[in-house]
Structures are given as structure tokens and as C-alpha cells.
Length: 597
Ligand code: GTP
Image (cartoon, rainbow, N blue to C red):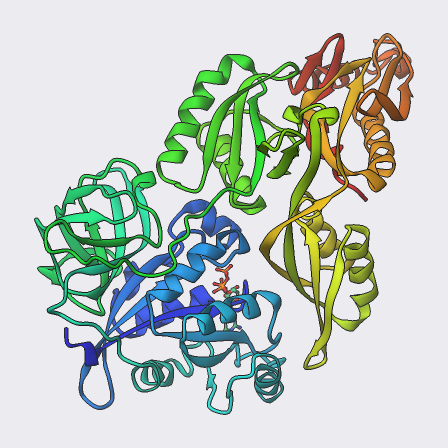
């Protein structure tokens, strides 16, 4: 296709503002798929995404559009992941296209994620077409939202599209705007091949499928290509485009977006953002700004039933095959036995993986407290990347510890502003900005990532009744007074519960932990001390008193069904416990104990 007849774009939106519905409508209205093949939200392919309504992997679709001027254009839509965990992938996929539709729910307005994503688009020099969605709803306020977009984002919204992705209103106009307002891609057909690796995933039949944007040159079947990051060479066995099913093509030229397969075994070998060129007569200069996604949140995954360790290994290996940003290594814990220390891009990523192990492989898991990566500087000058608080070296050898910090952007209605400021303050946040986006406060905080990974988002939702929106990016490492806190149950340290805390907050957290554990651990036949300690020093302590074993004793004979129910319940409860010395600790304790109210 001629460059002048190609338009490449992405859709930028806050969650639930209608990105998927709009994409579906664009695809459907151009006859790219027949109505009866049209599944709602075609682009979210994985079940789990569908259920949670989030888009995880970038997907793409090629739309042939016959414009009102009689010419036919190729419109390539790249769907970007919507969640902060995947920020790097968002920014890469933005670099593969020239423009964005900025979708804003006209009943809601600009939200934190709208901002975060629009900044990625502006960074990538996009032409941006604002789209006010949901104008079919009575609560729609297009004029107010236009003003807000101009105030907050600083782009011209006077010619924003007025759209209902639900009824189809404004879809034709939006397609015309894509053709006439977004720029055509640039590229040189005769230059050496330069293709950007936008995304990759594992397909059961084809092996690894690589999504590419051709910048210069052309790509054909049977070409021998080189991945410039690790220098590996492969022979291309298929190329094609998504319509949205895979359709083979003869050639992909400059400006085009499509896929290739080349008998690649692991997604790990294909790094998002890498440059692909020909083995012979390739380019010397890769595309700028390659930075691999690195895991920032780590936790231990252990099978509840130690006999399931091999099943867990199998599940983790399979998942890792298709997810280059998920890392794992074997771990043994005195308390939990054999398991894996796993690294994730963020909390959502962690949850998705944990869910899939549970659902697709049916393995009951104990998840230990998520932890960030600390840089531990030793007195002898060595620096250790600490992925697991249990491995924290003895304090006498440690010079200082640094932790990752984030820049968090939060938007919230005025009524809840005070609660949000308090929450951020309580989490060791440093306020950087407090401005207004139209009539809504926008706060920017510098926060330690470790105060956010655990339950910050849940807390934020609950103190604002769901009205706050939140986005973050990691800004760097900073030294602080951080120590390891251990938890002892019945005088035995439970390594899976140890955590890094700020020294000033250790007492408070330790107290909260032991109180929580006292509630979570059932009574035993003997007294159980529960303690929090730093080094050898106990900083908080509770005692769980002993009880009689027979839980049915208080049923005063009589009701046999009630008695049986109670015994069954006790049995079921047992299954989900782990023994620590002589003490049973329920599985949920490992997560719940760390939540702070
Ligand atoms: P994520 O994929 O979760 O990021 O959300 P999204 O931005 O893709 O939003 P989605 O398309 O899933 O739409 C969110 C909700 O809004 C769904 O219940 C849609 O049916 C609804 N919706 C989308 N567009 C419109 C519209 O124009 N009018 C009305 N009334 N509802 C809409």
C-alpha cells in the first residue's frame, strides 16, 4: 500500500470510557468482520481479560476503509494495554503509530489514566483527535468536557468528535477524521529493513508470533532476519496482517503493521521495542530508546499441598513461555517448603498470573507478601539487589538501603481530597502538586513503591468510594531508613511474613501485623505468642490464648446437622492451613496480615 493511503493509530482512554466498544464499532462499520462473527469486544482475546474488562496484551487490526472521497485507506489500529503495569509496552506501541484517538467519556471527563496515556501519545509526537464518547447518555456534557480537555491536557478540543460507540453515532465522522486529520506514516522502501518489534505472544500452532511495524525497507516470506538486541537470526516462515484474523500477505512495506513467525520457541527471545533487520545488508542503526521491561514487584508462590510442587513448576514454565516480563526462580522457605520467587511488572500482573495458575492449572497457592526490589549497599562496597526480605543481610554489614520511588498521579472529586492527602501522607508520600483539572483536584505525590504495591489502590478506592483514579510511574531509587521486620509465631520466625519497613513506622506496622495475625490464626490447645522483631529486638507482641479442641461443644448436644456442618467446616478450614512448628496458619493470613486499615 502507498504510504499516503495508510493511517496508523491507537486509542487512548481511561478504563471503562469505551475504548473496546469504539474499536469494535470501527471494525464492524467498515465490514472488516461480518456482524454474526462479531463478538463483543473482539480485541480483548483472553478470557481473563474479558472477565476483568482489562486489556493486557496489545492487539492490532487492519481496517480497509472506503472514504467519502472515494479512495480506500488502510487503517491500522493498535490496541494498547490500559494498565499502569504495562506502561513500557504502552509507550512502545505508541511509537509504532502516528496518531491517537483520545476517548473521553462525556459523562465523566478526564481521569488519571487518560492523562498518563495521553502523555505517552504526546511523547511519541502523535496527532490527537479527541473523541467524546457516550453522548447518547442524558448525563453527557460535551461542552464542559471539551473545556476540560483544553484546560488539563492543553490540546485543541473544539473539533472533538461526538460519538456514541453504543449506537454508532459519529462513527463515520470519526473514520473520516482518522483519514484527514492524522498524518500518513513516513518511510523509505529502498532503505535497509528497519522494523519495530511492537509485541509478541505464543501461539500453540505457530510458535511465537511477532507484531511488527515496518519503518524502512520491506519484509518478505523466507527472509533471514536479525533481532538486533541479542543478535539472533531467524528465517521468516509467515508474514501477514490481522483482519482481525490472521491473513497472509506477500510483503510488508514501510508504514505497514503486521505479523511474522519464524520458528521462534520462546517469547523471551523477542523483546518488545527491539529492532528487526535483515541478516545481510541490514541496517547498522537500531531504533532509539530500547529498554526492556523489568520486574519491579516480587513475591513467593508456594503450593498449599507440597505434593503439587511439580505441577506448579510446569504451570509457571508454561506461563513464562508466553510472558517475557514474568520472571521466576526456585525458592525454599523454612516455613513453606519448595516454591518459586516470581517477579512481575506490578500488582495487576501478579494477580493475573496467580489467577491463571489457580484457574487454568487448578493449584491452590500461598502467595507471600509482595515486595519491591531494594538496593542494599554493603559496608564493603558491594551492592545487592534484594528481591526477598527474608534474604536481607545482617544489619551490621549493611551500609544503607535504597528503595524505588514513584510519581503517582491521582484525580479525585473535591469531597474526598482530604482523605486522599491523608492516605498519601500516611504512606510516606511527599506532595509535589495540587492543581485543578477543570473543577477536579489533581494531586501528584512522590511515594515509595513499597507503600503502594500492597493495598494502596484498594485503600484509595475505598476512601473515595471508587471515585479516584490513579496512575504511576517509577522515578528512581532513594536511600531511606529501611529495616527488615521478622514475625515469630510460637517463637519460630515465619520467613514468608518478614518484610522491609521504614524504621519510623516499624512499631506501628508490627503492632498491626501481630494483632491481625491474632485474629487470623485459630486457637490451638496451647498458648501461642505472636511477635514482631527487628534484629533480635521484639517491637510488638500478642498472645493467642489456648482453647478446647471440640468446636461442637457449645452446641449443647441436640442438633446433629449443625454439629456435622461445624465439623465439615473445621475440616475444610484445615486443608487451607500450613503447619509452622506446631501451629497451623491459614493461607489467607499471609496476605491479610499485611493489609493495613
Ligand atoms: P477497558 O477495556 O476495561 O479499558 O474499558 P474500555 O475503555 O474498553 O471500555 P468498554 O468499551 O469496555 O466500555 C465500558 C462500558 O461502557 C461498557 O459497559 C460499554 O457497554 C459502555 N459503553 C461504551 N461506549 C458507550 C456509549 O457510547 N454509550 C453508552 N451508553 N455506553 C457505552
